[in-house]
Image 1 (cartoon, helix red, strand yellow):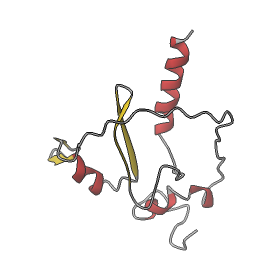
Image 2 (tube, helix red, strand yellow):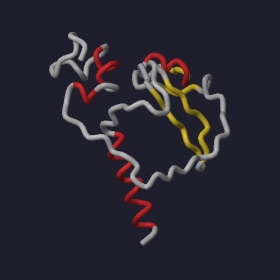
Image 3 (cartoon, one colour):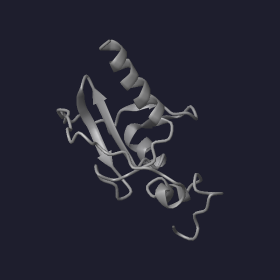
Image 4 (cartoon, one colour):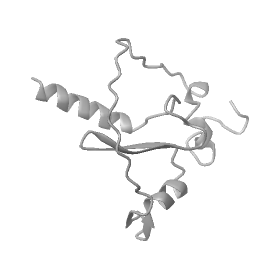
Length: 120
């Protein structure tokens, strides 16, 4: 762990840039592995979203590109109708990098539950 990152500040910028990718050096974690070995690759049809505008939380108008830069995004994947339209990695990450999920876990769990319910 870098000396500046502690349990007291690991969630705060700028420390979170490092800690979200190295949480296993701060807290006990367990890697979840794919025991089946099956990976379903989604089709890709890239769409340039860089200049898409929207209203930010502070009420200003911003672009997708600017928002990603100013929010210190580490990675994102935009899926529309089962097709990846935008997938990017920042801060030294790649598709195999580990990263803390935090509240995104709830969304994944709810989606998986919805699929399970839909399948009976």
